Amino acid sequence: MARPKVCILFAGGTIGMIKNQKTGVLQPATNASEILRHIPELQKYVQLDLKMVVNIDSSNMNPSHWTDIAKAINTLYDKYEGFVVVQGTDTMAYTASALSFALQNLSKPIVLTGSLIPLSEIGADGRNNLVYACLTATLDIAEVCIVFANRIIRGNRAKKHHESFVDVFHSPNYPYLGELGRPTVLFEWRKLRRKRVLKFRPNFDPKISVLKLFPGFDPEIIERVVERGAHGIIIEGFGPGNIPFLDNSIIPQIEKAVDKNIPVVIANQLEKGVTNLNAYEGGFNAMKAGAISSKDMTTEAIVAKLMWTLAYTNKISTIKAVMEKNLSGELTE
Ligand code: ASP
Image (cartoon, rainbow, N blue to C red; front, side, top):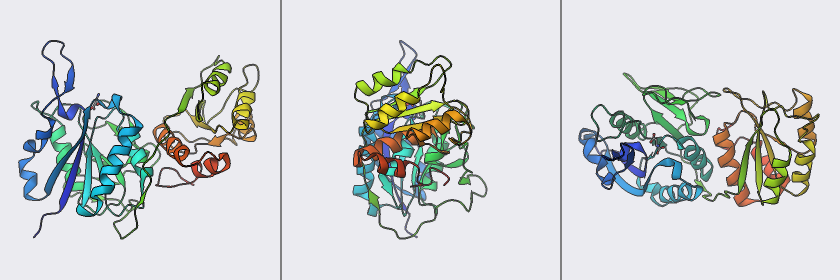
């Protein structure tokens, strides 16, 4: 039987790093293209090709790298059963979210993975993750997901949680898509493979700000961000998206930003966060001032979605409608 073809797009991270003998810190290896050498037995089942996108610590990744990855997948889309994107865990949830907006209507899986220990070190988690990610890329899944340890997680619902082998990513507001093991179990709420026309929109406008509220937050910070030319603002409020509306009220600043056609999204700081602007006066006033609710999106998904939306429109009513609508399983409507 013909082996399914899977394309690995390599974008760096610990998995391809080596230890600098002088400083002891991990750095991208120059020979990361050799990662296929670490999984020889897998190639009996899957035909693997490797394409290098970039080899950097994921803290250095920009939206332009998301665009590069999306473009590479779009170009190769018909040639492979599925894709594996290898990158660092630190910003993996952002990349996964971004790809879920750049490549919509998928008919095959795009699986992100990486590791906490370099592949070149004994006892590395990267080998297992890579093997499982490649196998997942052949399964009946048609969405962007993260495979780490034994979990398959919807990419735009994932959050980096812990630096431990088994618990790196959580999906606070959505069930896991599957569990890898004996047997591998896929849950019913995943998107299934079927013929669909891919919607390819790979651009992102990075000119946004994310502001985290704290007691004593100076409302002027929002004005400065507007003056510096932000195209969109995300405010992480308290509890379910509550914001100050008395002494340190930020309502006038939200109104001013919206008047200038700058969308303001209210998010929350909860671990299992759902924004509800109808719960308290603060959120309600923000809504009246024109703010957008992030609903149950992760901050990672909100960032990628706002950048993506801004790349295609600057009409504030359209931005609000898009941000509050479910595009790729990132929010519960
Ligand atoms: N700092 C690394 C990165 O995100 C961590 C990792 O690969 O998990 O690139």
